Amino acid sequence: MANWLFVSTIALLLAPLYIWCFKALPGERWQIICAIPIRKMADGSWQGLNLTYYGLFNAASLCTAVALVFILTGAAGVGFTIFAAVITVLLAFCLPASRMIAGWVEKKPNTFSIGAASFLGIVLGPWLVLSLEKVAGRYMGIDFDTMAMMSALMIGYALGEGIGRLACISFGCCYGKPIDQMPQWVQRYLSWATFRFTGCTKKIVYAHHLEGRRIFAVQAVTAVLYSATALIGTLLFLNGIFAWAFFLCLFVTQGWRFLSEFLRSDYRGDRKISVYQIMSLLTIPYGLLIPFLFPSSGHVVDLLSGLRAIWNPAVFLFLQVAWVIMFFRTGRSQVTGSALSFHVHTDRV
Image 1 (cartoon, rainbow, N blue to C red):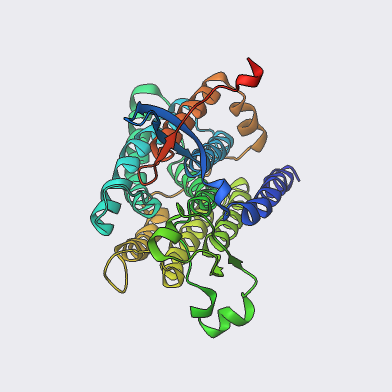
Image 2 (spheres, rainbow, N blue to C red; image 1 turned 45 degrees about the vertical axis):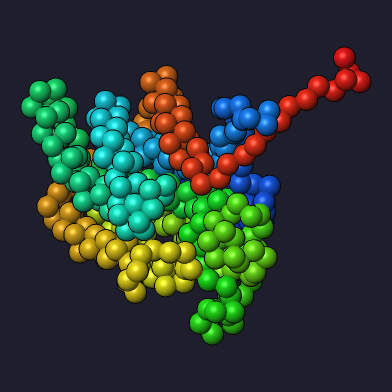
């Protein structure tokens, strides 16, 4: 009963957030949070640095995913030290790689790809976790279930990327094709799933000039699909079914990443099948091997232990640091600018 209540609570929190975001975020108002003056110009105005909702939603998605991973790993008996080490090393590899691989594929220096980061995380994750398990067992006397850790990470990734699609809606990137260019079955059954983006600084507007057009809401479909998959995976995990939880989240996220790019208009390279699609396909057979290479040792899962473990000042500090790093790494707009001027309200002096 507690497992269902936990998952239902997450679903009830996400549902109104998604409904509001799908309605509001395509609008021009919801791209830039604020502009910070950084340099005075010759005409007396200030050059501004734009901070975006793209960074805000990315930071929120990361912290939500990390919090869920901590609850799940805590429920499976993994301590904070091991958890923090795994997350820190993964982020240290994946965040820089997301820019480097995206720059190589798209030939643009100021871009960022979750697909690139997830590919590297899926490839390196099992070996990183196994290495930490060996070190912890030998030098610290700590034993934990490698498959449980990998399963929790994959569930967290599915939820984090689902919430992270809100960032794409806000910035107007990762967008679908105009609904009138979609296959007939999509036009017939999914014509209601569309966005109308407004604002000259949205990527869909300056890159493809699609302002005001009805665009297939591929970001919204991805958000709902990935989040639902993460919640089902959470239920499987809490019942001790680690391998199936891992493979479900892997297959749905990587399979949909491959399929969804055929429904998108944004530039993903010059090939008919993009490098990101190839990477997503490669992770599926690779992931199939992981439950066999790292069989579960059958740890008992206790949700209440995981919930108690998160009420720890070290955990909240870790999440705050992760939020700040992600926000300022992805929220400082490199492709939009602003000019600011200030004045005094003389009638109020």
